[in-house]
Length: 46
Image 1 (tube, rainbow, N blue to C red):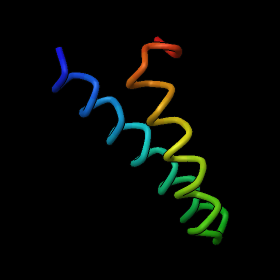
Image 2 (cartoon, rainbow, N blue to C red; image 1 turned 90 degrees about the horizontal axis):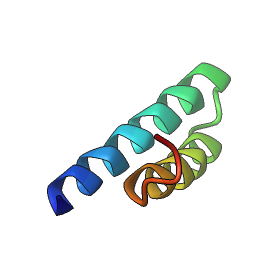
Image 3 (cartoon, one colour; image 1 turned 120 degrees about the horizontal axis):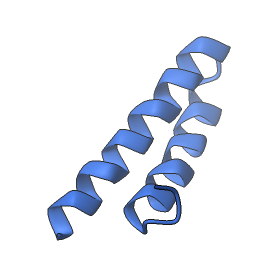
Image 4 (tube, rainbow, N blue to C red; image 1 turned 90 degrees about the vertical axis):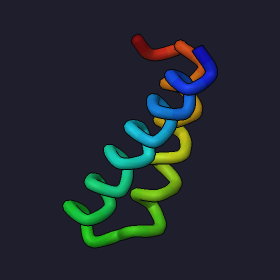
């Protein structure tokens, strides 16, 4: 169960980094990725 949360966190982080590359602002992308990852890992976003 704990591993699933970690995987979801990294999935969210990867999405954010992808957004960062797409918008040419890696810092913002990482910030978004951490936020997404935290939400995914806590199950707030299914």
